[in-house]
Amino acid sequence: MLKRFISYYKPHKVVFIFDMLAALAVALVGIVYPIVTRTMLNDLIPNKNYRMVLIFGLSLLALYIVRMLLNYFIQYYGHVMGVRMQAQMRSDMFRHLEKLPYSFYDNNETGKIMSRMTSDLWEISELAHHGPENLLISSVSVVLSFAYLSSINIWLTLIIFACVPFLILIAVLLRKKMRNAFMESRKSVAEINASVESSISGIRVTKAFDNAKKEEEKFEVGNHHFMSARDEAYKAMGRFHSMTAFITDIFNVVVLIAGGFFLYNGAIGFGDYSAFIVSVNLFISPVMTLINFMEQYQNGVTGFERFCEIMDEQPEADRADAIDVDKVEGKIEFKGVVYSYDDHKDVLNGIDLSVEKGKKFALVGPSGGGKTTICHLIPNFYEIETGDILIDGRSISSITKSSLRRNIGIVQQDIYLFNSSIRDNILYGRLDATDEEVIEAAKRANIHDYIMTLEHGYDTQIGERGVRLSGGQKQRLSIARVFLKNPPILILDEATSALDNTTEIYIQQSLDELCVGRTTIVVAHRLSTIKNADEIAVVRDGKITEQGTHDELLALDGEYAELYRLQFREQEK
Image 1 (cartoon, rainbow, N blue to C red):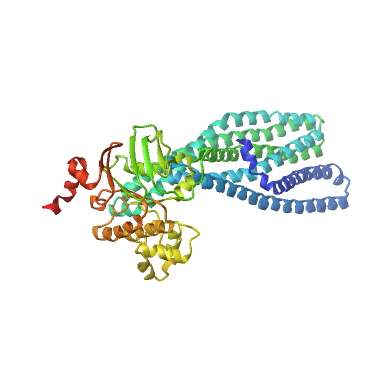
Image 2: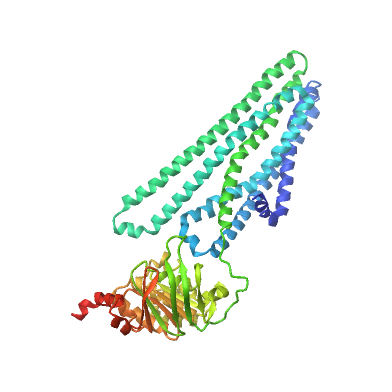
């Protein structure tokens, strides 16, 4: 993991080197003050050499001005380096997230993913910036201060140094507890983010059902978990800091008592003793910095571990011999396809079907039967367990996922529109399309006339998930998007089931035009929309129980006929 972390420094190695040199210079300047203090107390002041006192003082002032500039460099460029590393990690994570399969998003909440991309990466950037500086400045300061204090009185210095193992022992003992506590705290933050994201996304449903109290209760569960986790984290932190502070207080007691005996016995002069008392903080402060660094280290390491968890998720991958296909003809075959989610009960169990090029094939049956899963397997969103799916006689696993999906258009019941303009949402079908092509796609989807009534036309912002549009308008935009893509294979997954009857009739006209000349898979609950399909299959419990044309299935007087009678009973009376 350390090697992965260090790799993010490589693009910024010049800034990093200068940052470390500046930190080293700051540490070296820090040792000057006690040296000057000792010289003044032992030599310049007793000998009344006030001219040198002034020179030493002004020289020290000049060094402090230099240290001020160095500290500015460290703070500014160090943080810039940290932010750039954070940005690179965020870019890497986003690109990786784009490559992860559907199954990852089935099992991970958006809010938790967002937490890893924001707060966790911020902690990492703080460690990336402050960590090396603190280690270098403190380590150099400890070594130099030990050498300097030893030059004053080696025995008194060794007595002080003997307290350091107690600090190290406490840090080791309490480190693991603090690390575990902060990991739990981060998980609770992610849970709150997920809860808030879910509640805000569903605020309209909450208001419609007047269930604000319920959402508050759900939020408070996560909020209390967060407080509890933070409570444990702060307990661990409190134990860590209070014990380390106690040991450093002992330093001062040891210096006072031991130094007093040394002074009484003549083993150290008054000037050296005064200089030692002044200088001992030069040793204690960097030791404390190193100890306090443990907290920042824990935060940063915990954040990087969570970052690595995402980055170690296996992305979608093409087979080594997979090829790009430019344009498929559109024949689809399922051969003994078996699939289940997370090794649970099979969702599909031995599916066999064949759809000829340019034909319309409809899937009907009860919810949960496997219809949508069949649709998701055609673009290779999920890897099948056994069997095979062929496009034009070629296994979809032998086709690169990118080129396969370029040849498939999908219109779903739950339309996702981006918080952007109408133009941008249509362009999502083909990003390099011209304005004329966008307008033509909108016209074919019967949405152009409505767009032109808007003040900003195609540049109108539609809000998050297209909130400023009606259900029918959103559906038409999604249809325009597919018109622009112009794929040879079309999947309509209950594309009109959420619409009222009048809107459905208009949308169906657009869909009928969209289906012309394309191989079409239609999932529908309303049988009126698929009566004219070339073939219809009834899917129940992951199996195809009936298959044929509308008339053939009615003649069978089986499950399809029963569904038909239930839906059209009123019309047939």
